[in-house]
Length: 342
Image (cartoon, rainbow, N blue to C red; front, side, top):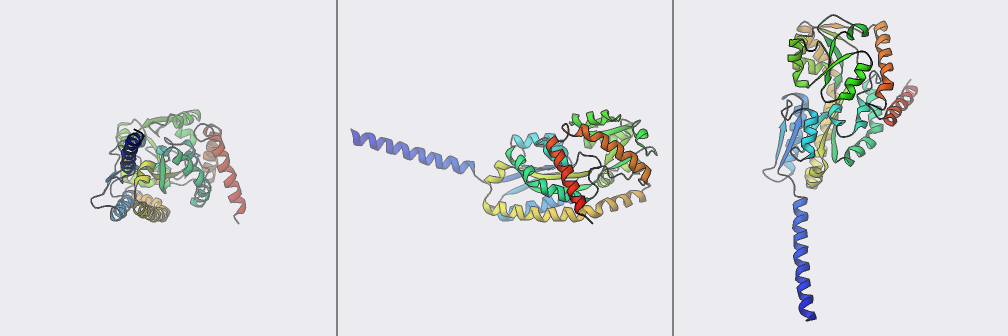
């Protein structure tokens, strides 16, 4: 009786062991299709680096694997793509800070602090110092960072020839839809934000729903906003920063070879985007000037006025748009960096 019972339990144990092995294999099975979303336009450098990453991934994985990219906001707003990643409908997305803050608010420190950064060198220094902590926070929320990148400095595009903060307070200013905190901070400074999706900017300009667009020159050029907003104030308000993130579950399910290929391609993409950012603003502005755009420089008097507005907004940004601890760390890092420069 004892032998039969022991034999029975042995067989049951073997069945459970096989089942567990199969289940484990299914859990880590490499996905056959990687779906990636971005608001970046098709054919732009941001779309191209994703294509190059996809080609590297497909070469390193099993035959028939696909890396499908959805540009032009096909999958909706950045908040939409984050939701789709969380439920597994998408596997990765190239996001600006606006989308990244849907995952963790700390990333807002790289973009939502007006006139805090004065150069790309300052941004690079701060981001590299914050990067381990930011990536750890994103990973804790289920996302792996593949690429960090930038898309130029936000300038102010307007229908009317205006320049002072007082004049801008009378205009209707584009604000990212879904970010009520940003709109609230703008209102606290006396501005009139109108929250709409990025894809709705041009029709909103044409209908008069908005008449001012704070946006990087490349996006103004691609979106042809300059055909309606004929003036640009060169204010360098904030840098546009972003990252390409992948669901951690998807990333960990990949073979080591596929992960290594993806990482190598991501490093190359990071360098390509970094070298491109130095000239893309200038090239975009020149192209729009050829179409009739008038660029207004920031005189010392205007800079003083806008910097006063920016610094007045910082207490509202701290703790609301950017976690207080992260905000304070950025200021400390910038102070240290500036003291160390000749």
